[in-house]
Length: 89
Image 1: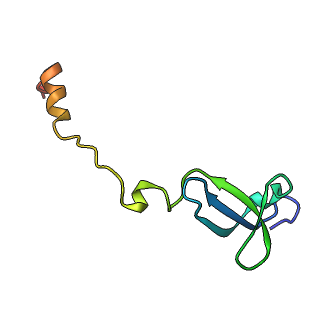
Image 2: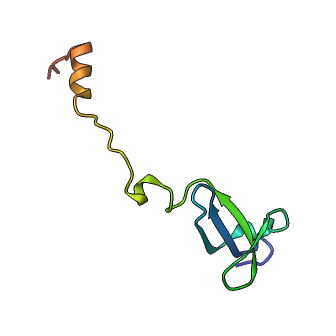
Image 3: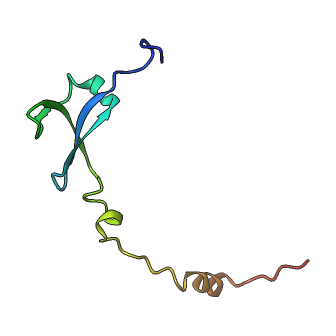
């Protein structure tokens, strides 16, 4: 990789704003580290902090709290409202 064309890649802490869950990972957002707030992580080092709205800690699919939308009957409702046309070959 050419060193002049790629953004810096370093450690950043992402924190879910709704649950407070945070995790440390590497990202190119470290390039904006001067404009981001910092947080002291469990290892005692300071890392840039990025707030996210949804993570695996709050997403309904991963938490098991997703709701199943009942779409049964929607096709029948459409056919009842607009009728059906038979295809002629």
